[in-house]
Length: 182
Image 1 (cartoon, rainbow, N blue to C red):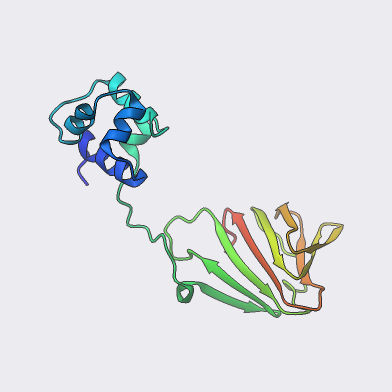
Image 2 (image 1 turned 90 degrees about the vertical axis):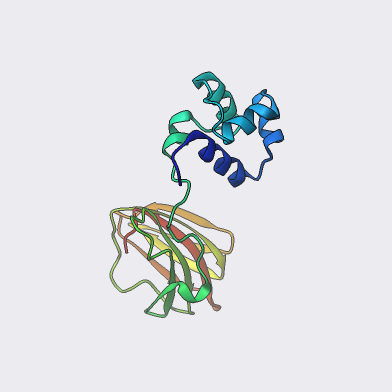
């Protein structure tokens, strides 16, 4: 994409699904001002551009540096998820092929009695998760808690921890960790 102001403004407006009229109204400028900027027929002052960008709650520096056309994959079909199977736990990793991932996002399914392994886990990350169905015993250091549907956790993964389905039905968990541990 060209790096000119008009093209960037039009792309930003399109991303938000706003008309030129709506942006003008929010920014307190005329419709023709927005149109002329987008056509690169006028070069707006910094103050004028700041007014326009305030209507999007975006700073001028963020506007000028944001990637308007990323080639990163955003959407993933079910078949594209990376699956792991271990100790009766079925893990589906979302976005494994993204460059420079900063987050690990998992759909976890534990069969009755399944667990994360005999050894306690440690990673250099933080993790949060929510139990969707079933019961999950979470051991973190010396603390043990059985989480049920709707319960959640937030842990520092430097502390040894382990997950185990102690219920009598399959347990489903959705979790995220940053930075990704795998």
